[in-house]
Image (cartoon, rainbow, N blue to C red; front, side, top):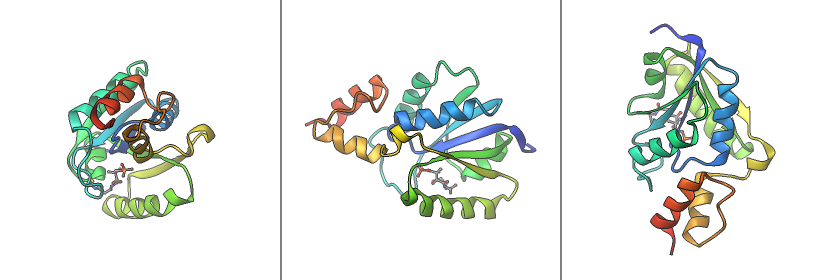
Length: 165
Ligand code: PNS
């Protein structure tokens, strides 16, 4: 499908989705006609996930249900192949700190080399989420830290069930 500049992909592992991801997805939904949240089935660099693909997709569907132009789908291909199949021209990701930059630069170069027509766009994280990561959330949940303001309530209870000691 020819890329359409009104369709964006918000990709990620989302293990699990945080309020920082939701902030980026919500801001993207205000800029594009359609947003596809693309949940990577088997993340190459992250090994196994705490939550299955179905669980990660389910949390995102629940947390984005009020956003009419957002859909959530798993994918198992190269990201740019998925974007092209869905007719998306833009991949939108959040950037929190300089530490994200090196990883995102590498992903950007890999993706552009595969398909130069699909552009990546970066939104700076909102200040209140600039420290927030899925790994940090999992660490807090494992040791009984307070996570209720950082993830959707369904995710907080699933994390406590899965990781809480
Ligand atoms: O921020 P994340 O969760 O590490 O992002 C995952 C993803 C798929 C967006 C990132 O790894 C990426 O941009 N990969 C590009 C290379 C690719 O298509 N790999 C196949 C899926 S792992």
